[in-house]
Length: 248
Image (tube, rainbow, N blue to C red; front, side, top):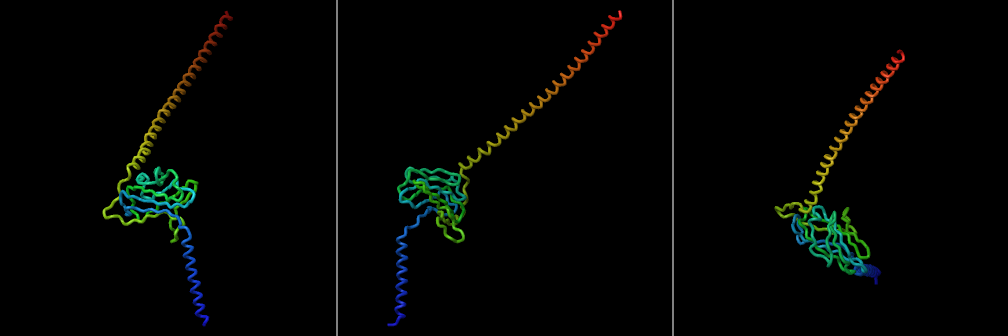
C-alpha cells in the first residue's frame, strides 16, 4: 500500500480531532456575561418608549444590589420613570442618568428592569453605559464602546434605532427640568440687586461721617484760635494795668 493515501488519511484524522477539540472547549467554557437593552419602539423620536435592560449575573456567591445607567445625550434623567424592576428596588435620578437599587438579588439571578422614556432622541443608535454592583462589593462595568473596528471586552448596551417617522418632532423639554433651572437664575438677580442696594447706603454713611469729621475739626480749630486771642488780650491788659500802677 502506498504511503501517500496513509499520509492523507492521517491529516484528515488530525483535522477532525482539532475540530472536535475546539467544539468541546467551546461548549465547556462558560458563556461571557453581558448587559443588553431592548425597546418596544426602537425608532428615533418615538414617544413613551419602554426600554428593557438585562444584566447577566457573573458571581456564584453574590447578587446584584444596584444597577447604574448613564443615559445617552438627548434623554434627561427627569424624562425617565421606573416601569418594572426587582421587588423592593427603586429608581433614583443622578446627574447623568439613574440608579435602580434595593435588596440583594440571589446569586446567579440576572438583574432586569424596565424604564419608561418620554421620548427617544433623533439618533441612529444609543449607548447606555451600565455599572453593576454586587452584594460583596464587586463592581462590573459595561461601559466600553467600539473603537477602531475592534469589539470591546465589556461593551456598553447599545440600542439601534430606525429612522424617525415622517413628521415626528422633538417634544418640549420636561417641565421638571425647566422648573429646576428657572429658580436658580431668578434667585441670582435679587441677591445681586440687594447687594448693590446695601452697598449704596454704606457708602453715603461713610461720606457723611467724613463730612461731619471735617466740620467738627474746623470748629475746634476756630475755638482754639479764639481762646488764644482772648488769652493774649487778657494777658496784655493785665500787664498794662500793672505798669500803670507802678508809675503812679
